[in-house]
Structure formats: structure tokens, C-alpha cells
Amino acid sequence: MIEISFILIIVFAIMSIIIFHRWRNGVYFLFIWLYIEDVIRKLIPGQPPQVMLIKDSLLLITYFAFFITLVIINNKKPFALWKPPFLTGFLLFGGWCLIESFNPNIPNPLFPIIGLRSYLWYAPLFFLGYYMFNSEEKLLRFCRILVYTAIPLFIFAIYQYMFFDKPNILIRPLELSHQIHSFSGGEAGSVMKISSFFGTGQRYAMITMFLFFLGMAIYLTSKKNKLLLISTISAFLGVFISASRSAFVLSIVGFILFFALITPMGRREKKRFSIYLWRGNRIIKVGLALFVVLIGTLSIYKIGSDIGLFQLSAYSGIKETIPWFFRGVNSLFSNLQWLGYGTGTMSQGLDYIPGGVNWQYTMLMLRGGISLESGISKIVFELGIIGFIFFYFFWGQLFLRIKKELKIINHTNLESIGVSIFIFLICILIRFSFMHQATLGDAPVLVILWFFVGIIFKLKNIRHTISEE
Image (cartoon, rainbow, N blue to C red; front, side, top):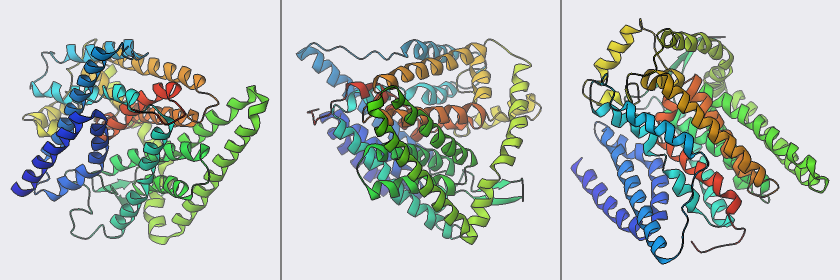
């Protein structure tokens, strides 16, 4: 334990020096850390959650280095800081989160820290995403490398599935997370939670879903690249084997949305129509490849009978989720208040705070034992009806601004990248709002989400030649 901690401190110190030399290195380190954080945590006895503080410290240093760089640029030459077009909604929601941090109902001053961490701490990454790339080539190279990681993630997921019963800490998800998912519908049963390099199956499902969308986008505009196609298929199969029905359904919905948003845009310009027909054909080819591979996977007896049956029970799962969702929402809206119980009072991570477990149990009993799993319930419970309005006003403004950005970059090579990010945001908001509040409480998902929000607003200004950063 001491040796590992000492090594981590030395490595962190070296990384800090490199980040202060060039803030973009901090972004690269952050993405690398997302992939290895849970592996390191598993290797440390007790799997201490304090390991997650390394990521937050790494992000803090990157923020600071970015800020210093902006100050230096301002002193050397005229420089206009980018003003996000969704800033009004973000400031309204962020300001209300800060106000609710002083809610007298909060039993422990650490609660708001947990809440603000998920709501606001990772949000400034949209500035870093906006300033990260100045050339199309560097952006595409970064995205391709991300998509390529779907292959080792899927290979390890298969290995994890085959040897799940072995007493190996690296094979299982984190000790305090769900190991097995029980389900009903069709035939009742249970299925293993496959997490790959990550600590939970849900985390792996969300990240590999994003890699699937991003892989489709890059493959759509690139030359023949078998590795990219294999990576995209691996990402989709990773969603399938992760045992997350919501991610599996959203991936299929996202694929359909991608096809719907990309192909019709060329109808306004006849000279571009052939290009969009070619794009549509490539999407269809990817879809057929996914279908064939999925059928092949289902034909493998053990995977087909276990995970295949589980994913195919998604319809029954949706039928179960709808009444469960409305029970939670009705229990809150029956006693609707303008103010909530305070920021962080239902956020992920309360188990690690003194009094957190007792607080959650007390609130559960007050609701008559009704569990609140949806994000809508979380927002209303913590921030009240005012916070609910501000939260969805922000997301509505964000989506409207993104839609305008997509119109600007129409008929460019980066259009598909923008569409894939947009679809990922839609899927994340749907999953958070109606299924699992933990979706927007998971740091790796938040890092990807906020960073690529910045990128989508930079696409129209990215040069098509190599540029000095």
C-alpha cells in the first residue's frame, strides 16, 4: 500500500511539471487516467475511493495551467475569450446549485461538495475542449486513438466474462459495485456485470457507447480503414456484453438517429447528393456488419443464453421501468416545493461521507420506501422545482445552440463528428432523466461529455491543415 502510494505521488509530481509546461498534456493525462484509475484502485487493498482524488487533482492542475496560459496570451497579444452560447442557462443552473449548497436541510457540509463535483466541477472542460485543437488532422487523430481503445476494452471484457468466477480482483468490478444483475421478463435470470478496465459495468457501457458513435462518425468520412471498422464494431459489442440494457437500447436508437440526421441534409444541394448517398451506403454497411456480428455473438451458446437473453428482455425491462419511474416522481411531485433538500443530498458518493448512509435511509423511509433512481427525481429532490426548471432550460439551450452549429458545419468532414457528439448528449440526458441518476454522477462520463461539448462548438473554426498549437 505504501509503495503504491509513493509511486503514485512521484508520478503525479512529474505529470504536474509536464502539465505546467503545456496544459494540453493535462488533457491527455486525464484521458489516460480514466482508463487506468479503476485498475489501480483494484490493486490497492480495500480499493480506497481516495484514488479518485488523483483525477480531481490532475484536473485542478490542468485548469490552473490553462488559466495561466490564457493570462500570458492576453499579455502578449489581443485575445478574446470564447463565450459559450449556452452560458445563460449554465450560469442560472450553476448559481442555483451554489445557493442550494446553503440549504438548512443539509445534515453535513460535505454533502454540497459531492453535489457540486458532479454538477459543476467538470463543466469547465468545455473551455479546454474548445481550445484543444486548431487543426482537423489533430482532432481526428485524437478521436481515432480513442475509438481504437474499444478493441482492448472489448478483448478484456471477453476475458472477464470467461473467467468471471475466478478469484481475481482485476476480473471483477469494484467490490462495492453491482456484480450481478438479476432480471425478469421472458425468462427470469441473472447476468454478470462486465466492466472491462473500469470499475462498473455501467461506466464501461457509457464510454463504449460513446466510442461506438464516434467510430461511426470517423468511419463515415475516412478512407477504407479496417481497424476503425473493427474498433467501431468492438465498441458496439462492448455495449452488448456490458449487461446494460439501457445502453444497448440507446446505442441502437443512436445509430438510427445518426442515419436520420446525416443523410437527408444533402437534399438541398443536388451536387452534394451523391456524397450523401455514399455516406448512407457506408452507414448501411456498418449496420449490416453490426447485425451479422451480433447474430453471430448470440449464436454462441453461453453468451447468447446469458447476456443475449438479458438484452432481449429490454422490452420487459422498459415496461417495469415506466411504473417504477412514475412512482418515484409522484412521491416527489405530491409534495412539490420550490426549494429542494439541498445540493448533494442525493448525489452519488454519499456512502463515503459520515452520516450519508443514515441520511439516505431516513429519506427513504419518509418516502414510504420508494426509491428515487431517475435523474428527474434527483434534481427535484435536491434543487426543488426552481432547480428543475433551470436544469432543463440549460439543456434545452445547449441543444438549440448545437443544432445551429451543426447547420454551420453542414457539408464538411467534421459534420459527422458533431452529429455523433450531439447524439451522445441526447442519450446521456435520456438515461439520466428517466433511468439512472448516476449517469451524470460518473466522472469518466462527465469528462467526456463536457470536453466534447467544447469541441462541438469549435468545429466550425478548426482549420483543415496542420496548425501550430
